[in-house]
Image (cartoon, rainbow, N blue to C red; front, side):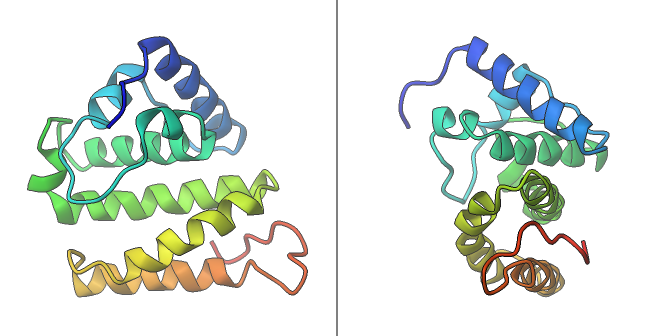
Length: 160
């Protein structure tokens, strides 16, 4: 992992993510200090460099929603929250992914959705998911796949 970004970058990124969430009617709001701690938790999955993540408003939205969902499920953000609560966190990750993709598509950023689709396909095969989680991820993947048309006729988020 490269040098960790300064707090000011977290503040700016979270403000941008919160604005996107508000504009699209989602209730979640993030805090820079929580995102900073979250990005330092142990995880069995590869993550983008923090600076790269902070540069993408849709990835920041994803993290804000994931953190909020984890907390809503009664967990505290600790260094080992992900590795000790994989099933719960994987459920929160799906909720966050759905929000990320819907907002990106609604913003006309199908390039982001396309770039993340390969990740979504790999999540469906994750051996750490339960069978029901794999089915839920596959159903989400199938809904997103329908958004892509012959000429990508624009954002089509029906069914989500």
